[in-house]
Image 1 (cartoon, rainbow, N blue to C red):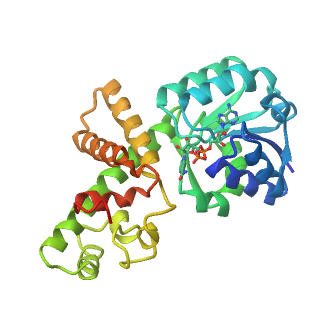
Image 2 (image 1 turned 60 degrees about the horizontal axis):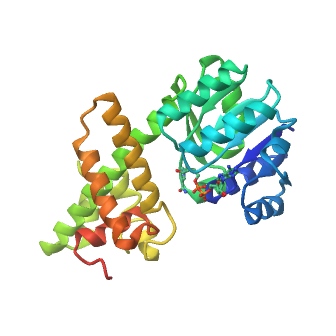
Length: 296
Ligand code: NAD
């Protein structure tokens, strides 16, 4: 049994904390939302009234927070001041590479081991304990990081030094945003050309157009495996979340001097879709905009 402090019990963190409790670890859970803490307690965690209380005797601290500023402030002002120096610190939020490196530097200077360990997989994978983790940390710390993440993970990959986990996450999601828009355009054109969606799926999923957005997450209802398209694009990976990750990728590209014109286009299209009021819909719903059928 490991003593775990879990901070941030939202859509993702709630399921992740529950996975740790299911694995018989002692989880002290804290969130600014009382409802989120109550859900974690119902799933076998112990409530903490503050970050300081949650981390006070922790062997592992896990954070799952919205964005970089939250992570900087929770580590800078609370975790580093109150956790034992022996605690392994794991930030699983998706944040900008600079914030991840800044927090790692601060944690290292204070004598802590720290890893950025963002995840791929949505709420259902968080609940099932089948997330994919991409980790940025000292190589010597990776075995301990992998073991601590095991109850929540299907696979854990060491991406490199501090910040490499976040870099892998935003590059992966930029590729996903671009491939989803390409997939949507192709299905929309097929429709205009009188080609049945299920026939095009059969071809594309077995030809050189094959990709995850076609084969596993097809944006057309009733075609291929069950996806959010089959439930009016509810649940899944929200457009607002995809937009956040595409913005992180564009910010990183600008700072690194990388040319990412397709990523920029994907960001612009998802920003437009979000501005039309569809931020809460699954990101594959962007096909409705490309078909000119936003009202459907
Ligand atoms: P969420 O908004 O549902 O949860 C975030 C939680 O953090 C909230 O419950 C909020 O109250 C809490 N919080 C904020 N500030 C806090 C503080 N100072 N102290 C304690 N708690 C605080 O978000 P989510 O969907 O769980 O996503 C969390 C992270 O995971 C994000 O970085 C997101 O990009 C990433 N992510 C999400 C998904 C997804 O499908 N939802 C998939 C992969 C990665």
